[in-house]
Amino acid sequence: MKRCRFVLILLVALSAPACTSSSLKNLRIVSFASFDRIDKSQLKGTIAIRSLYGATENKTETNEFYDSQGSSIGEIFQKVEQQVPDHLGFAKLNVLVFGDRTVKQVKLEDLLEFAYRVAKNPSASKVVIARGNATDFYRVATLSGNMAGRSLLHTVQSAEKSLVIPKTNINNLFPLLHDEGHDLTLPYMEWNAEEKKARILGTALFHANMFTGRFVPEHQAPLLMMMLKQHSKRFYFTRNLFISGKIDSVTVNVRKYTTRKRLTVGSDGTLKVSVRMKMEGSIVAYSSNNIKNPTQFKDSVERKMTEALTEDCKEIVNLLRTSNCDALGIGRDLMAFHPALWKKLKARPVMQQVDITPSVQFRIMSEGIKK
Image (cartoon, rainbow, N blue to C red; front, top):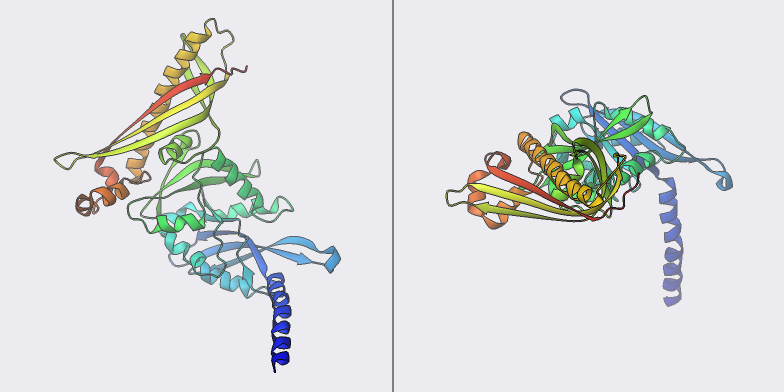
């Protein structure tokens, strides 16, 4: 009896890996997906599936594209799955792209609901907002023989390192989608038909999980990311500065920075928020042909760059206020430290009830000047 039981256990153990391997091998890997709203109740999806063809020793990989329509993303995937011989797998889904008109009309948590329900959900997938039609982005996936969505993923990851867009994925979006004290920001991109590539426009601003139609442009977006206390090892600012009676184009490399946000509530219930940023970096390029006094030039760059970046921060704050986008999480601070006041104020957008004062202090660690 014991021998029979041992043989049975051994057979199960030997067959389990084969079953697992077989099920993984038969999956059709979804690597890219884009969605646009075509009317009040219907979405159109373009799905890229990575497939293997040929003999075992000479298999070739190819991208197959499927179009389908449905009332939800889950329904679209179900319809696509009916067109392929095996089940769909989402573990290697690189990027999800939504047209900007779609996320203006449908809340993002409703669109992403499928991602949190499927087994082995695409937790590391990037979510991108496209200017115009998201369907245009399938062209990015067809430009190379790589897995569809891979080049777009690399573009997004590069922009994240430069602090042009927030570092987000489906996994860390989940708590933000259910946080009434904090609004989302997401990558905003467009398809450039002439250059045949996707281009970063900046950071899209959301309120109540819907796109506001506004975004912080690429050259100012790193300042917003710094306000949100996101970090990068190295990034650059280039500004035209009026120095010594003429305009110089100066590029600085920011190597070190800190951000401090402080919320104060007055006796009359007025809200004030100060956002103070300190940066240290080096000059890496400038347009002036002749610098007679390097020390004076350094001091001028520090002063003028501080003024320029502070002015940019004020423009960003005005954009956040116009969009009702509480990306700074002021509502969350109120919930944590002033819950009674939060209950009284939350009926109206917080950004309309708070005075935000940003400031930047820029200091040069070394000139490191390169012509």
